[in-house]
Length: 346
Image: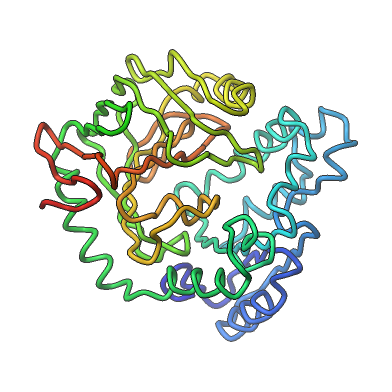
């Protein structure tokens, strides 16, 4: 809690999560109380925090405007601790994509404090049977995996990742090369931020916001399907010109991919380039919180940029999609190969 949020006396801290995470929710509430702060607890039925039955029935004009009391909470809270504990990882598919997008769009302005870190926050997951099932593991195996990815020497990891990130800070262009992939991304003036157990747990990546009109080339995410809002899309292929997706296809659920790309003007541009470095994550889990930190991978996020690292793209969408570089892939910085087959050369 000290590293991620550093709760101070008198703070109002939102503590949100699914009911299956009760043991962790209770312990977090105790810790907030010991720090002399208020724990404002909100427990969801489905583990994601979205009130799906209400969103299915409410008129559309309400979906785009959050309840004033909910907006006030995010506008005025000092901290937010979010514990995801889904009963069903595909629960959000029960809500039409356009209604979910409207709901998220309405809340987006009130989350701006989170993106700028004015609202101190941390998000994590609690091991539930559905998360284990999605990963193809028993619950005990998933618990061991989760703790192994989270309980690292984060000071040592920060030092290690900072060495790699410095090379990106000094570069003007990143080139990703791999299976059916050759894409160049401008990063001049865009500093990389190291995630070593900060806002996300587990940490284990460094990331930056690319120059918005710079992406050129093609990338195929053929190794792993991408999951967003409970929808799974396989074989995503994107071609960029002047920073914008001009061609897109998928081998499964292509309609959903195109729907997300057309959400708004910013959805077809890149908001993030991330490099996975967590040594405890070596396999795909169908779980973006872990998959984007997989050692030897890179991920691109379509949509909203990250203001804390200079990103200016604005979108309802922020969809992290992972590219495996461990077999035949490489990363170049201004023409110099810095990583090959997932192994660092610098």
